[in-house]
Amino acid sequence: MLVNVQRYSLVAIILHWVSALLLIYMIFWGEGLVRGQPWMNPPIAPTNPGLHASLGILILIIAVARLGWRLINPPPPDVPMPVWHATGAHIIHWAFYALMIFIPLSGMAEWDKSINGKHPEFANFNFFGLLPIPHYSLSWFGGLHGLMTNLAMFLLFLHVAAALKHQFIDKDKLINRMAPH
Ligand code: HEM
Ligand code: HEM
Image 1 (cartoon, rainbow, N blue to C red):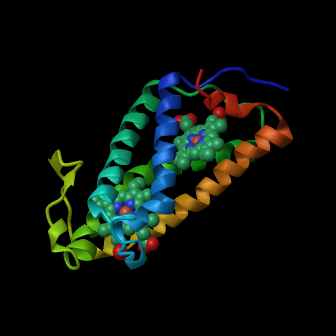
Image 2: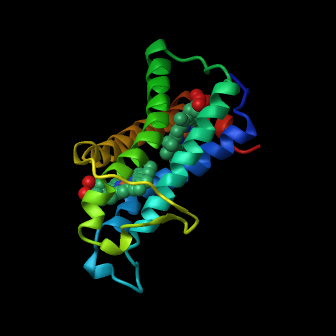
Image 3: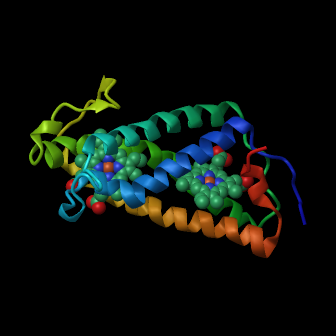
């Protein structure tokens, strides 16, 4: 039964899917751009730390825009569901916003330590060749980068599992709220 036909705005929907695709790519495959993979050397899949960083910064920029949009344009009211379920969903949503901001910042924080040492050619890297990206050697903070990406994977699993439950068990067509229209 379709219990609530109110949708997210088109801007919120576009920002959701662009950031979702970028984040999914980065947490599952983007690592290969940073870490040396001898069996995948050019021309098959050139390791390109600058691309990893540029895509990461792009996620950060989109996340800030998305957060701004979200604060000005409140989302549609929740579909009816148990309070613990709605609370859990909200916690995951806000955790995603935080991760989309702090994963890239922690990447910038560990760049010097983990990349410059091994690849001095990436000492001064750019955002898609346009602007220099600031970076630091904060090893205590940088260690969080890998931890936070693991947390993002776990939350993604919960988020998608919840969407599938709404679709196939509750049959409330919740996904339509986030579908392009
Ligand atoms: C295939 C993967 C995904 C599916 C099927 C999906 C589906 C959805 C759906 C249906 C909603 C609306 C929930 C509602 O109406 O209450 C939603 C909201 C949300 N999703 Fe996803 N999503 C996916 C991936 C992601 C990823 C990777 C992120 C992280 C960037 C993300 C972040 C969010 C956030 C933050 C919201 C809440 C938006 C708000 O209220 O401000 N989603 N998602
Ligand atoms: C949302 C955006 C990003 C995601 C999802 C992401 C994801 C990842 C993942 C999964 C790894 C492997 C971590 C591990 O297994 O320990 C990694 C490593 C790394 N990332 Fe990112 N990253 C993002 C943004 C950035 C940015 C913006 C920078 C720098 C400006 C950066 C710099 C690095 C560095 C230097 C490593 C290597 C860590 C090491 O070898 O110890 N990342 N990233």
